[in-house]
Amino acid sequence: MASITPAHVEAASTLAVIASSNEPLLFLAADLTVIAASASFCRVFQVDPASVPGRRLADLGAGEWAMPQLGALLNATASGNVQIEAYEIDLIRKGHAPRCLVLNARKLDDGDHGRVRLLLAITDVTLARAESRQKDDLLREKAILLQEVQHRVANSLQIIASVLMQSARKVQSEEARGHLRDAHNRVMSIAAVQRHLAQSSLGDVTLRPYFVQLCESLAASMIHDPERLSIAVTVDDSVVDPNISVSLGLIITELVINALKHAFPEQKHGEISVDYRSKGQKWTLSVTDDGIGMPRGKLKAKPGLGTGIVEALARQLGGQIRVTDASPGTAFTLVHDELAANEGPQLSAA
Amino acid sequence: MSHHQVVVLVVEDSPIIRLCAVDLMESAGFEALQASSADEAIRILEARPDIRLVFTDVEMPGSIDGLKLSHYIRDRWPPVKLIVTSGKTIVSESHLPTGTRFFPKPYNDSVIVEAMMSALSEVNTRPLPGVDRRSG
Image 1 (cartoon, one colour):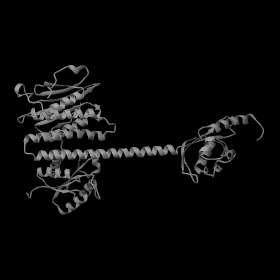
Image 2 (cartoon, rainbow over the protein chains, first blue to last red):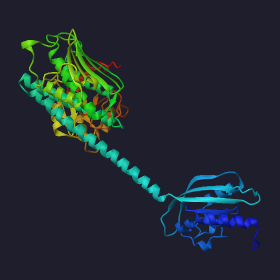
Image 3 (cartoon, chains in turn orange, purple):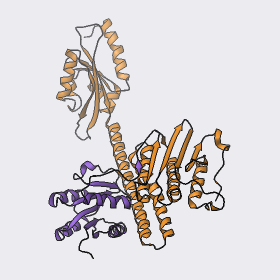
């Protein structure tokens, strides 16, 4: 024991490495006697450094390390090639809150097969676990709050939609009824985006289901004879920012309302096509009908609220609205393309 | 009031939404009864065996919500048709009794009336009018 051999010199440097480790470490013999402990181990787990060398693991401190599973795992590590990797265990000490530990242990191979040495690293993750639990709680709370807000928004929109339709049913003037229905459709258009946002976790809106739902809703409230008029929706796989989707949805709402009101007088059969496609930064939205076409000259309708809304939103989106003769019918095309920004006739401002 | 009117029950805790829903159904030709909670709805259903359809919200105060109410009605009065609405978008139809239609809020009045007509005439659900689901 006292004689100085090369093995002892090597052990001394090993002991120095162990002692200075920032991560709590134990250096153990095959019988789970502690040869050395890092200063960090003694500090974190409040063990007197002088009491450690030569003591069995189970006798450290007040015996709190005498955990049967830990002993079994270390014995298995010592006897074979098993390694303990990220094994979690609770350290229970009298007068202390339980600590959550992550253990890693391996048998050291120094070429001397007759002498087994184990290195046990102990990480205290109690704080990290508590923080991650708190983070999970906060995330859950946030999800619940968000749901609650969406629920309230949906209910508020329902009140607005219900009152508008109630007024439309009660009012005597046909013109006022039309305006109330339009207002209802605008509210439903915004509500449809809200619904798609509530369902998407990414915060972006996939246009196809939104536009399909929007046009279903418009058809349900505006088309009384589905055999006569229909709306076809063709959309690529575009996904856009919610603000852009709200504007696009409102533009579609206005253009579809406009077509349903003016393009098919006298029970004419017809179809309205809503089409959206994008390529890189460029995108095109068109609403085309196969109705009677735009009136010309003196018959030209005075631009109303709908035209104002469409123009303002088109400007906001950095797009150009073009009205073309679709023979038969009319095509409204909104193009967003830096190159085409100065081409084409614009709708006259209201 | 005509004796031939179909009787329906609106269950909704928000007074304005309930008022408007009752008006919607009356203007569509139904006789509309109303309840502001599931408990009240059950009392009315017990008193009025002529109710043929219940249109209910989900989130309501009281001992049970609209979801549980819909199952209770299906068990106790199997022929009564059910239409459920909610401000929570993600109410899975699998949580509802079979044959129940679900519409998220804000619902479209015309869609609700159409769903009621369709349920009451035992015609299976058909596509919404005028919309062609083509995609490119």
